[in-house]
Image (tube, rainbow, N blue to C red; front, side):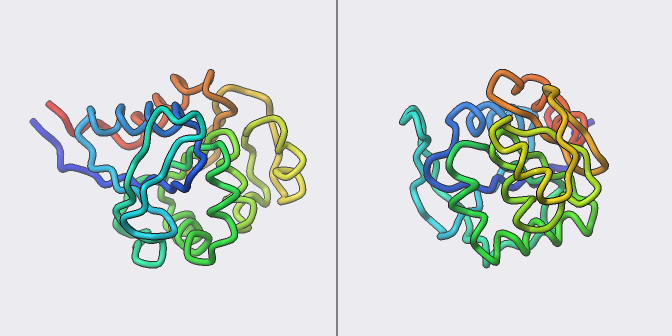
Length: 177
């Protein structure tokens, strides 16, 4: 029997790591979930840093309600550094975290969580180059392909995508036949 379709948010801005957006996005949609791309502006065309793909945002962060989503995915690359200064993005992830919503961040994605004050006492991984940022935000950095701490799922690089995507699918479930 088919499950109810679940909504998953992707937080995205220009310069994201192409595969860290494309592969989780495709896996979630192929498993019957509705994916909503949230950025700084609604209708913005967002390009990957390698130029292999682009997506158009469905909502601006200020329009998004964290309660509408069962999970949030934050691809890495340069996108998180663009998003993390936006108060609506920070508020969105803070509300999702308070509700226990799954937040999956890969590569530089945890920078948004650090800026939102969500890493204190948490264990996670990220692109190794931001390990000090994770520690400064109160998190414990571990160098593993995927780390799950409560509602947080984190990974390091595109090489870790299979494990990262599997953890997200395990959490969200499958809505396809």
